[in-house]
Length: 407
Image (cartoon, rainbow, N blue to C red):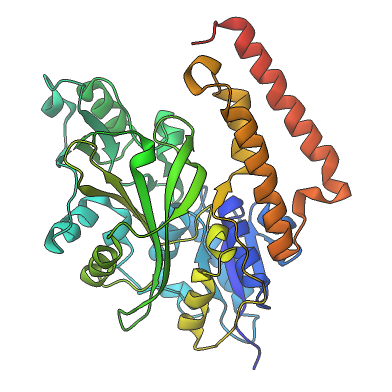
């Protein structure tokens, strides 16, 4: 019997991290999405065009099951974003006939991606969380001073009545959190159809954010982990990691394992904390039970968390075929370009950041090429697309700079 293939969805940069880690180990990888993206262009991937789950999760699930039914061995589902997790949970009954899920199902995922339930589990596990409470009406936040408080959605994606998925950014224009007047922010979150949380703004900059990336087995035992911290983010504020550096565990690993045990979860996860600059305590912010953007940072240093998850789900023992390197810093190549063209302000960010981003992005691309031998956008056929995208971003940046003074 053939080994189970990996089915990664949808096609985005996080999916690319999964494709490279699993594909380089010799696992057949299929990437599904409505249109070809970065992961589908990898030499390790076969792209499958399928309905957009954002428009219709039933249509997506029907197409996925029809494809999986033709496979000799049930493929393993790997979600590259929370919307995919929601779709897989919604259609668990039909998907379970044809796919293997690399985590407990159903019901456990909601205890992680819904911050209300995540924070409740954390408190039961004696893990510090920021002070927070759910707001059902914007008036509940009236009179609260903006300083020291933020409003965020309990879920960044939600299922719609029409059968699709809506994301928080599409609804509000914000990435994860809305600052400013809490009453106005709560009104925006609630108007978008998302549950709102009023939360303490943990003192300190983004450099105090620490992530523990780990894989826990079905028996609740830790299989492997690595720790990292943000040194820059995009977009600002409350964005994703732009520069991420590996660090030693600051004493959070046992708390992470305890949290996942409390929730009843096994599989791969990255759990984010922020160190309170005043009290020195680490407080839980978020957890992602899926593939994420800079997962390859672990691969380049010998931590193959997704491959371990595949082996746990299938009972196979695939081993990595890549040689661990020495790279301990990851810089998003695409994020660096977007940051420099859209967000960079010399007076605020300093003159040293641009060369740091450019050099770091180049080194990350080179490290990925050396580790996975997957050139992707470095192939000759991709050069025109990269040049066009770069030119477009630079034109947009010049227009913005000409309209407003630097701050």
